[in-house]
Length: 171
Image (cartoon, rainbow, N blue to C red; front, side, top):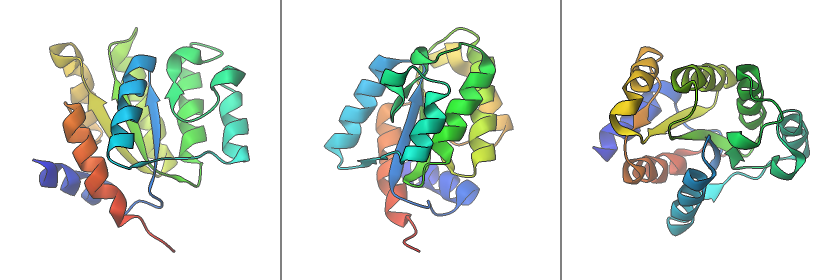
């Protein structure tokens, strides 16, 4: 399965521009688990440059304007602020892939569409981890419609990231 999932990401996005991972989630707990798992695999959590942090501060509380991004700490809770957050991470030079860790949230399907549309507009590789079982079937349908790669288990996400990021360009 891992090779097929990797192939889907490579086919859709090509090689990553860097080996850094930008994480966005509506759940701080899910972020904590993801960051721990990245550390276990020696994967690189992207470091944001000053410009990207400044763009992120337009949408996030100042104490949370860094990578990983917990969407629960946005200044405004509207959908447009989600696009701004995704755009800020997309513009960070050290981010090679945007990794979205989904848990249930209000307006779940609208939020996922907003995240996916903004991520695709940013031009970086994208991977969604969709964890909430059947509650996220509508989200999976949206991601499939947009041809956005997603997995349903954290282990699968880690496998894809571990296989994908060594392809990072060094030019």
